[in-house]
Amino acid sequence: VSAARRRRRRRGQREGLTGLQPTNTIPQKLRQLFVILGPILVTQVGLSLMNFADTVMAGRFDPVDLAAVAVANSIWMPVHTGLSGILAALTPIVAQLLGAGRREEIPEAVRQALYLSVAVALAVAAAGALALPRVFGAMALEASVRRIAFGYLGAVGLGIAPAFSYAVLRSFMDALGQTRATMGITLLSLPVNVLLNYVFIFGPWRFPRLGGVGAGVATGLTYWFVTIVALAVVLRVEPFRSYRVFERPGRPSWRAWSEQLRLGVPIGVSIFLETGVFATVALLMTGFGTETVAAHQAAINFGGLLYMMPLSISMALTIAVGYEVGAGRFSHARQYSLLGIGASLLMATVSALGLVFFRDVVAGWYTGEPGVRALVESFLYYVIFFQMSDAVAAPVQGTLRGFKDVNVTLVVSIVSFWVVGLPAGYVLANFTDMGPYGYWVGLITALAAGAVGLALRLQFVYRREGRRVRGEAPAA
Image (cartoon, rainbow, N blue to C red; front, side, top):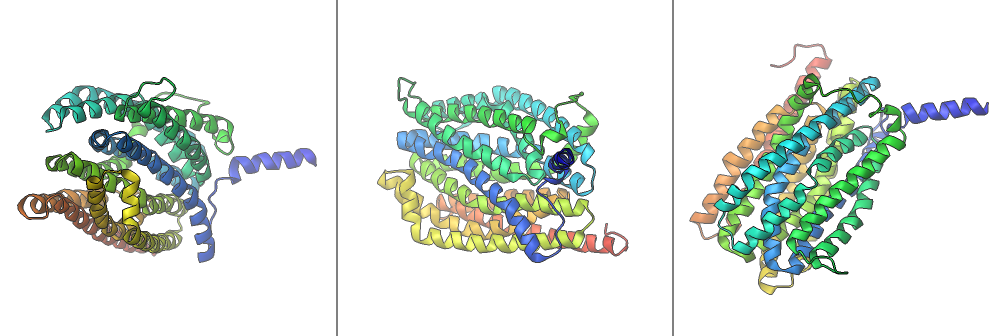
């Protein structure tokens, strides 16, 4: 009896503990959605807090270092998030395989994604070595800002390979519904990152006092830390260990890469275009002076922290919707989508109201300089308007990824951010009295246009899938 129980327990660990189960009622769906969402939110907030720590601690060191970190992040973050988006296409792939009962195909999908992450890291390192000197040479920056920003990126570059490998491992763990694993890794890494920031920015205990460059060193070392911990979890902890991802390493397969790239490139490029607009605005802000750049970066950084809620809901929906789509349960996938959008709107309303009353407190976290603080407060007012558009766009985008419907999302990103938003912001900033605030109005316009475009696409997908379930001819 004892041996039989042990066998059943091991079998349950291997097969049952995916964190995802079929649900049939709204309360069951809400419970499962929030079980997935909670750890993702903690993880995303933790990752955002790392960037928050970089920004705040560099700002406390010197406003020049804050501006330099802002410029460096405006280059690195679009590259990092965009390419990580390509690798994160593993999430809907694994979720649909799991929902369809094709568990045996998952390990090879993870292995090929890891091979792809190494290729991506090598390409980024080579491109950065060639392009960065020219990019900084073309920018109208103070010499000290240019030097610190270049040093920050060089230090972060030491962690490029583990950063992209971790994106794959995290996607694998999250797609199984085991989001608490990545939450635990993030909670471990957050104090490590803060400690490393303190050590390398301010130079206590005879460490070098590197300022903004030290923030880059801390980030690069933190990438190594999270990847090593994630590898240990995948190798030693159930249910990940039962997939034996590293048991048969095999060889890179272009055929396997092509499937992930077909899904991942539109996701990654879409993310790159969105973050790229914010990065471009940060670079354009350099024409208004170092104080404006620092204040803009502080406000954008806090806006990014608030964005973690709709982004986390988006990621949870990709997992839940992908699982239901793989199982052929379209109506259940739609219910998850509606629940996620409703929760996102409610939480965005709460965060926007909080920002109305506490903008001065938030600004004080970033700087003690009265002039910069006043600018941060004024920029934070515009962050309020970001929240409502993000509350719709992010969960809709996560739903579409769960359906593996990503190509139209790319078109929406191009039009809303680069055809509508950025040109509008440029005109308002340079040909009206709005000055730097014109760029923020342009960003708000872009986010609103994107939310409308994505919502229309989701309605089309609903109708298409509905016809398919009823056996009617699918839409073109």
